[in-house]
Image (cartoon, rainbow, N blue to C red; front, side, top):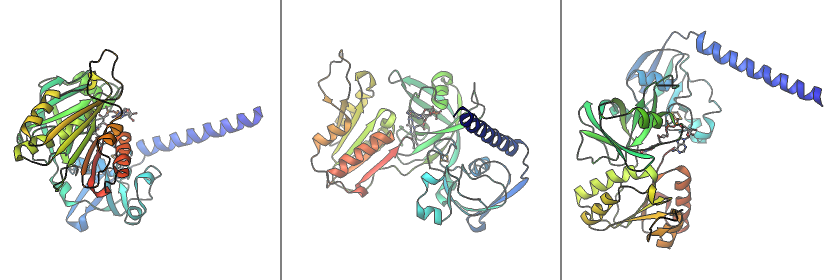
Length: 367
Ligand SMILES: Cc1cc2nc3c(=O)[nH]c(=O)nc-3n(C[C@H](O)[C@H](O)[C@H](O)COP(=O)(O)OP(=O)(O)OC[C@H]3O[C@@H](n4cnc5c(N)ncnc54)[C@H](O)[C@@H]3O)c2cc1C
Ligand code: FES
């Protein structure tokens, strides 16, 4: 038995060693020279350094593809159609691609390495994504782990976006983080003020970008971001709208509500906000102002684990249970959800179970 375990251990060590040698050799010894990327049937072409990811090669040429996980192959947002030259689909891409997408040559651009000439397709609207230079105007603590970061735009000086969209903030190399990474943050700003971009950022313990935001950003710090991205936005309709968010999922709703106020939007709207305890609630005064300014809006915070010292007369329980109690029948309503994937999936289950058609449910998963 001992001999068998030693043999298996040795074999594993050899495999790991060989993999490392291959990775290091590919990283430092392979020279793919210059490669040509042909875009949209030849309407543009780029001459780039081989060996980098397709996502980085395009970013280097100021063509910005959504990439919320910073190229780790986990968000699935960086999809592009690769008509030729991309090599086989990698196991890291598999979970993110449907059978139709695989057949059509759709790939995760962060996983495709530029090793030779490529022929790709990029949706036209992504060419209007811009890079912005800005500077931090204010940083405000909303709770112990959430900050409102307000940026003043420098160049270009204004941003046009649809409320609900997000940007990708560049976190530069710092400390143990050797290279810049990008992370997605929904805009919480009032779209009527295009000279500022505002975000609500929640600290993720040991997170690369949020640690940088919480420890290094201060008023006056220059920052870079690109965007806007995403199709989370209000959709036409007349029935009641149910907004559901948790934590920093509050961000896009601030922007959406500001636009609703500007337009005098009369649609009945109920906003359910899930938090653990009183210390996790924020922007309560702003929500009260929306309640008085909008014709038919109510903000309904709910606590799932209030502290024994919390004086709380509001809703209690998981946000899914609270929504379920309010709406036995959701057939003629629309829902807009924003927050963690787990919360969103649980809410979709509840709403679908109460008759809401899938085409009436819109969401942005923060993952
Ligand atoms: C479309 C979109 C919009 C987003 N909008 C916002 C927003 O408005 N405000 C906001 O605060 N965040 C938002 N996010 C999340 C944000 O992009 C980052 O993922 C998050 O800030 C963590 O980045 P980080 O570099 O600090 O952590 P990382 O270094 O990326 O992660 C460190 C570790 O924490 C885990 N982790 C990552 N994110 C979370 C999380 N949220 N909770 C628990 N564990 C996590 C990772 O799996 C990893 O193990 C959004 C994400 C998407 C996809
Ligand atoms: S950037 Fe997230 S999967 Fe490619």
